[in-house]
Length: 487
Image (cartoon, rainbow, N blue to C red):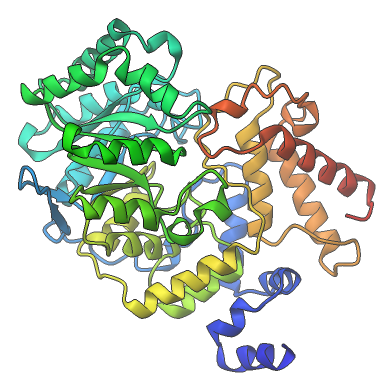
């Protein structure tokens, strides 16, 4: 092992990098390049935007062409869809944060500018939902898009009837019609059954939401009438529902399906989250049937743009001039049956970085694919919690800020501020960074020690995180750090 590590040090061997232990990672992470370290520190300072910290040191000065967007053809309509799709879940607010994270009002002027810039550079697919941005996404997106020629964009929205109170035929159809009003349109290009497979009931929940009430039959008729141009579903969790819907493809004739796909979930979805299914299987089943795939979570909830510092350094050495996030976007965009890749882009730098990945796409090579699989295996060694910051777990009845706690914990793992022992040379520095950062990120009355294990949050988590157990684990870790006890 020592010889292999020495060889890695001398030759920059990626194979040697993958052999690093967790402790070696922490040591190496502490000594990583000044650029990466400085950026990681800057991105964690209070008041800083939550943006991709690696964008600024890459090719963000390179001009983005307005006519080079890689397009994919919808096999049904033959229309050209931009490979980059705009996910309208993280719309900017007037306090310069995301509407997914803040109670602040949407900054409509800034949102209009982002939409204008995206359309100017070839983006024509915009994905929203009645559930996004506390119910304000459709309206804000409708305002922004209605200023453009209707032929210049495609709108995707969803029947987000998650609550049993919305399962009735009347309530679901009312939600459907409201989307037309909010989006200011008389037809919807891509309409989805939202979050199929979420929850503990699986097929039973699907039947209650769409079959027993006749809502799916209603939507099929709306497609025949041209009010819906493409009908599909977004899939989360229960593979039985996914398989059932594809087995009945001849009956429903799905025009597209939205799945979670990234280079971690391709072969390791269950290692990230035991309830998930490998994207390799999902994509393969869609491709066999000729159903285009719309991709969500290409960055795995942002985790593939905020990788551990040593992983980031490995990616940077592989191809200088490309952001960490661009690796994930180019990987997923290289699959030919991908119609569009969704990204929630709150800030202009996010949008510009992703545009550079797809204007035009430079597909990853077979060697790159192998390299990213090695990267995925390396990342699996670090026990981050698969929180995507969707906030479906909120509000907590006891006021706990669940996403902020989980994200701080993951951030400290990614930045090497998780000492495994009081004997660790970095213990004092990491201890201070964790505890001070925790108090800054989460007010005292909203921290993990206030969790009583009521499990109110658990059924709402699409990643199936055992949240009360994680709260106990984090609280115990914090207490040991505070008291200077052995971890």
